[in-house]
Length: 331
Image 1 (cartoon, helix red, strand yellow):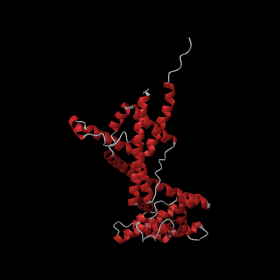
Image 2: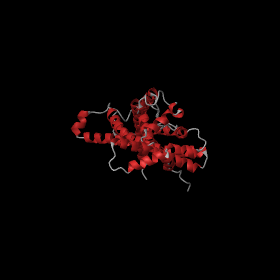
Image 3: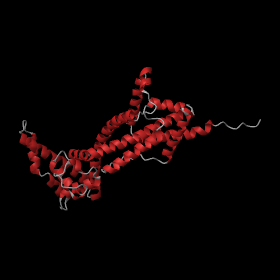
Image 4: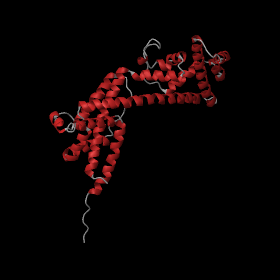
């Protein structure tokens, strides 16, 4: 098993990755707030869920349970000014509200897609070369059929229980939102990779150089490991919850940068970097590799590195006592 110095070096490196990941995650959050991508992606996800039916999307966003989450009137405000989050229960009730006040659910849901529309839809599907107008009507009726089937399935499996019906539609909505979350995760992974590369260059966060310093300088290694222990003990937050407040996002970014510089100033920065020396020794490629490794590491995100750091600290607390020599037994 590797020695305690090697373990402490690994802990120090992971801690630096965690601090840089905090900075890049906060920067990514700040960018999202500025660009307002979350409301646009949520709108896109709901539109896909409702088969791109402009009529039904408008009904949902105009329902009081949803319209109260944003300012203005749907259709008059830009998608980026719509809510960035809609609770599943709000969506479910907003959708069921479109059934009207009819006491019979079956009659109400059948009114959503009457027999006349079903016949028209079937006739349009049988046309081999529909006109543009027929294609638009086919799309609209297809959306009606899609929503009708979804609501009817939710009501049938609810067996007359309104709470079950709401839960069924809420689950349908949440499954679609999982796909939207997947869009954000893929996008965030790429954004973090780019921001990690920028941070590595701006603050000279060279993985190879950091490993070398940690391995050879016991004082720095002990200081960084102590900071890592404090972060784990305090259960430093890796929360990446969405916010629409630009000021809050900016404060979070400033705090993460301050924390990084306070904990890693001895291992990062350009103060000890000499370009002439690098060029003369032909080691510039090593710095580029170190910066690239940092960018790749940051792309995994702060929660990942916090979990890794926590596991390393558990291993360290287990290994350390065993490394002490046992008292010599009397002969």
